[in-house]
Image 1 (cartoon, one colour):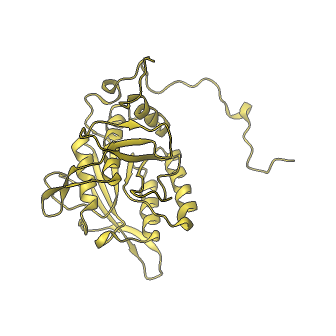
Image 2 (cartoon, rainbow, N blue to C red; image 1 turned 135 degrees about the horizontal axis):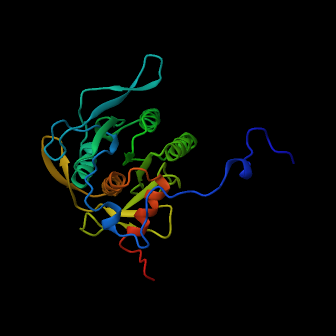
Image 3 (tube, helix red, strand yellow; image 1 turned 90 degrees about the horizontal axis):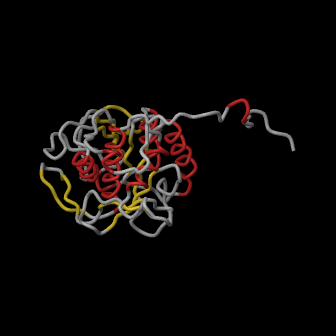
Length: 273
């Protein structure tokens, strides 16, 4: 069988060679080393959701507001917009990230309408735009069970991974197959029932890889107030917030290395066994 042109990879030509680790990792990784003292400064986080309410005291400044709109040609495009949130979901997620990484730069891409409704085209367009802007972290607290979108979402998840973008995606709240959280290139998140917002647990039996605080979470809500919510949607931004701290402390880490740090610092993973 002959190799197809353009698909071969010559190990002698391209490497591997000796690779110098970008960050001087300690023999035993601790949370203090991973993100101690970090605030999220210098990290760009994009919330792909329902928008974010402007001026909310639990969120503060949003550095960019965008929305997916359908053109007269039927194509979905992303453009700047006035900030708003039609259902509160994006505002809630943004407030969690801000509570953990107070100095990160927050951006919003609205793909959901009032009543939590949205189209597959809007999801693809919004996520594609965010990936190609090369945000450090993209929080996606939503998924689709439309199998016809799986191929394009898979390709976008890989594009994000190879571009250095961390895609943090919440698992579906019901036992159904949905995407993109099931892809190995993303950081997939479900919720645990503990009250500790800093508690991250590793799941040794994927597809869900990590569990974050997602039960009875205090979040910002439209109108300048707050409420309490439960679900995987609110666990994902907790993990996104800690990823922002990690990238603030160690800005040159790859998605693979950040995921490794989450694993090594998970509360149920012991390094002394």
